[in-house]
Length: 289
Length: 189
Ligand SMILES: [Zn+2]
Image 1: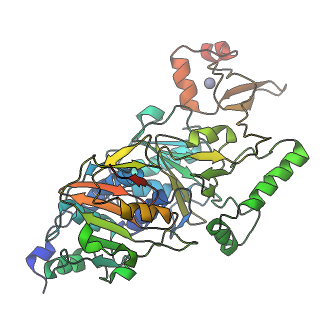
Image 2: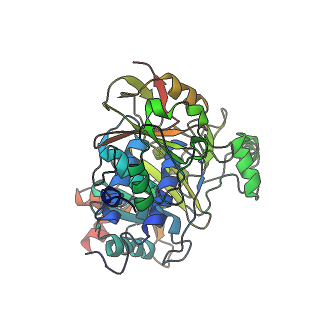
């Protein structure tokens, strides 16, 4: 049941219309940051107020919502956002990627490939990929308008000169359909290839008041150089719980003696694999417990 | 005083009906060529689909242009009562509604600026027929290619050449909507 004290999905209708118009323009100009008048939400900035507003504008009572934080469904942040929409939107919720029609995420793209009909909503802290080069919004807006991305390439190349490789591991910048340079939010660059997706991807930055979007099958290219092609860099390890050799892993400290294990950051992916009988190097002890 | 016609034809359960209608609008704008049904509204002289789009997207903050043929006293009353959208000439419109012929010349409409390409009109084009055939569409939102019964191709090609500037269009027919954003490449069938 929806809590009658709230509007459907919390926001009032006029606010939802404003956000919806911004989302549609975002889809029409993939990778371009559409300004919108972000509203106060009953949660602090940094808890994904931009993503929450985009999700609120998209949800219908028929949706099945999944919320992940760093790949996990059970963090405080993910749980509180999920409860918020259960209460204000009356929507069904799930932890299963393939069952979800809308997925709100912070810092990961699910391992399970998304399909047509799904919407992935990203919580974005800093939407402007050029911000670290140029603090002034008026200037970055001009740079996007003129496709002045030379400085960005110079910065990345300096990185190669100093480190032998591009050291950016998160929020690795991409070029969308050969036009706009876009910040994919702080996902690991491992996830960048999955930005080309069958799902609709929407990005919401609350504090910075920006919405941007990637329609399905939009061309998304991670910035790189001919002599230093983009490398999504997979950890040289399998998941110690489910044995997956292709997923993004978190390193977990197990004890005071420095014992460590590597586990899938995507908890649903890992649990689903284990339920199907897949095992990792350290899973016997875990599963016996 | 507005006529009774002006007072009816709105959503009976706005939050839920608008949410469902927006989802359809989102799907079709994200997947050019895709056609989806919408229901729940009826403005005087318009298709149900165009009525639903107006109720879902327009309000006091969205200057609206009603092209010849769609514009009527009854519709103006309906817009005033349900949307409150200011009625404006084509040049000032954030949304514009009419048949393809009536919306011409399209050069009148806002196409955004280099720094704010989002400040461009959204056309709502009333169609006699809307089907997944005709012009070949490629670009963002389309896996390989899609087809849509566009009223012509040249205007869409000129608009696409302006990218990232340009207008975006919804097409409405009966209860169906489809869309074509400025990013779509259009070729004649
Ligand atoms: Zn695993």
